Image 1 (cartoon, protein in one colour):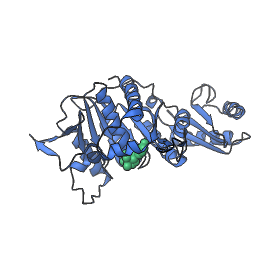
Image 2 (tube, rainbow, N blue to C red):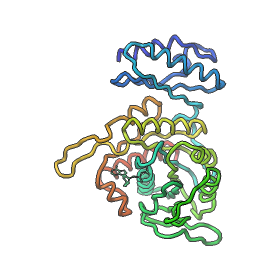
Image 3 (spheres, rainbow, N blue to C red):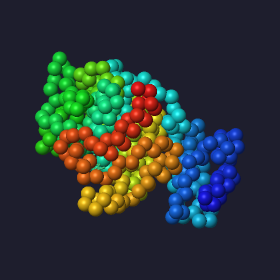
Length: 340
Ligand code: ADP
């Protein structure tokens, strides 16, 4: 706590280059979090500043924070648009017939993004919404496995037909291509193929389309976010630092394209041994929650690392029990925040 106060004092010595007082007074610097190891994280909003001024301000803030006794590392997250924070106003979907688009993203692969996307879709359907799920993961589409869909997508009246499973309509990149053939997608081709999948699919009237984005924060993800303009994005991360660094990039990426970050979901936290009931934390615990706080975005929930989650996804079933209740809670939050 003492270190946090010292960091705040150090920040009050940094003037906002756009005027109006210090970076604390104008709200440019916010969400200060101090970890036990002396790592300090904070969010710096650089709206209205040109690139050089923003970089200079970042360097000044970093130097000021690092000078504080007890601080080992300063992590400054730049956000380019304060409107991209959870306080941004909801907007109407850009695809006719679909009321809201919600993207599920992760900074890196293998963190359970597709599992979260599918189970969020199931939970939204349980809550009475008409739901679609688009698997836009060009690198490793997993929705066909998660939903037990085999073969290619059918085309009727020039429209791709989604498959209906457990009450949701699903379409996957894996239903477009031969699963045994490697396809190298160039960035622009991948994003236009995916936008076409959204627009040329016979979704019918949907309350919400959940989009399982490819992992990472490259051009494909950025273009997709720009073109589809989702009403909000959920970021999935495991609790360990490496995944969190990438999650931070994902939050920054959505900030760049003015997509509201609905919050962070921590997956694979707390392993409960099915034999003795002992709970351990192979990937750490609570990292995503702290990080969400540091980035000034909501923390939406923690999904435990459970054999049952894996077996449910491998047998194309929605998760049940405690994880299902967590997804129901996350879905309730999404319904309220995007205005479903
Ligand atoms: P991503 O989409 O991020 O690559 P997936 O959703 O495909 O990740 O998940 C990767 C693997 O981890 C899958 O085998 C999935 O069943 C498993 N998995 C995901 N979340 C959990 C969890 N909470 N507990 C156990 N296994 C999980």
